[in-house]
Image (cartoon, rainbow, N blue to C red; front, side):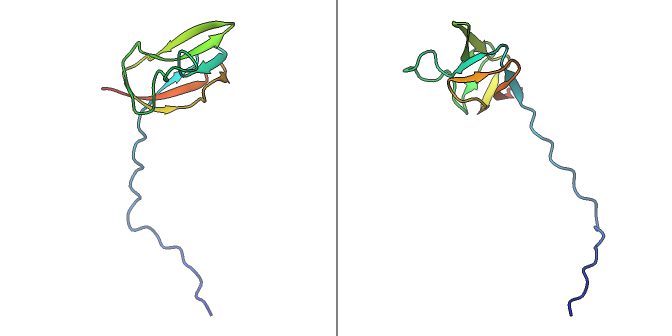
Length: 102
């Protein structure tokens, strides 16, 4: 016969969770098609791990046949690209996560 399990009170409170890293989210300023490079045969503007400066072009969004350069609003390191190349994006949709340079 198995003994019933008893709840064991914790001997100390659990440590607080580590604070989540603050990342800056670059969002689409318009509806359109997301492109990582200036042309199909060109290298992408940025890759994950790249350091970027405020004002540096990150991608383009094509809207109504106009190519709109989307620039970094902060300096730091690109930690994630959240959209696939040539995918439609909505206004306010997150595009990049950047770890700000302090």
